[in-house]
Amino acid sequence: MRGLVVAVVAVVADAPGVVAQTVTLAETAAAGDCFHYHLELDLRGQMLILHDGSKHELRLEAKARHSFSERTLAVVDGWPARSARYYTDAVASAVVDVEKMQRTLPADRRLVAVLRRSEGPLCFCPAGPLTRDELDLVTEHFNPQCLAGLLPGKPVQVGDTWNLSPAAVQAACLFDRLVKHDLTGQLKAAANGQAEFSLAGTAEGIEHGAVVKLAITATGTFDLTTQRITTLTWKQKDQREQGPIAPASRVEVTLHLKRQRLANIPQELDDNAVAAVPSDAIPATMTQLRHDDPHGRYSLVYPRDWHITGQTEQHLILRLLDRGEFIAQATVLAWKKAPPGQHTPAHEFQKAVQATPGWVAKRVLEDRETTTADGRWLYKIVAEGTTDDVPVLQSFYLLAGPQGDQVALTVAMKPERAKAVGSRDRELIEAIRFPAKK
Image (tube, rainbow, N blue to C red; front, side, top):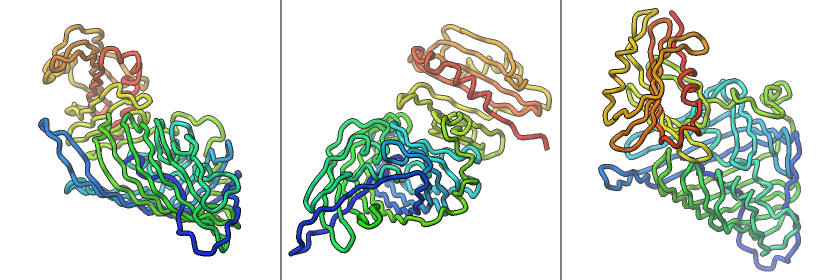
């Protein structure tokens, strides 16, 4: 589940007889800061799906555990803007109806760079591309880069309240775009070097094209000596509408966070370890994702604006989002293998395209044999037509490798979306790789 972790704060009842005092609730971030975090998340609710024209509720439960050290590499506007994390533990499990799933982070992907952006955090592994599941595992938990933004940043007294900035709320809620919010914080108590404060309210935003509404209550602890938030218990009620890549859901989430400042930078985050993290623009190759066919028939390294939404024995289904808007759908099909050095004749692929269920071609825009940049045989058909009476523009590709491995790709879009798709369908088919010769 995306965006099921958020902000920071805390609450404790005022003790009788406590004299009001002024305390400063502010964090000052600096390059070189290093903290250790431990997160525990519990989620319970329902996934809402449409089947045969009727709505069905499926039980949804999930748990996640993350332990990582994070080193700040750069600061912008008082918040960490570029960080490096090293995960010693990262695991998430989920149950949807009766189906169980589990995600873990492999040993060679435990170093993750995090770039804070207005449209949400950009996480990537300098060692190589992550899978979509691995990316979700390191992106969809609470992002500690926003902690300072959830504090008033000034002296306050017990009982004082403050409004959170839109930037802080958007970052804490992991929204791609914030629509509105009324989140406020309050200092509840201050004694023995600890300040306890709360956060409560609602927030509405857009995440991957879906409207998300949150009702939030949180409690946490601020250490007045170190001037740092040290604990967080965060609860939210989460209502999500159907989106282009995920069904609707209603869930309740509880998050526990523990934070400890590290006196020394661990070896996994020393200067040698973080040297591979770019200090300026991030190369596109570093943000790409990888997918390996479960049967070893092909692999794919692709831009992350393509989202995997389904997989069967033969098919892989992806959807292309552009700033949260659904642009096109791609279907990768493992095609029958040909003898080494050969491929399916073009006219046979033409017949298969014409026989696509529900597809009626009206006008063929392109029909030719060509080659990829690395010299592999590629056949391409582009045609306008209808699918179940809906106007559609489709690109059909058949790619063959030197050992006779073959994959077909179909990319479907509304005709008016062709400009937005551009050459991304061609880039997707060229990104497919076949197993090396044994």
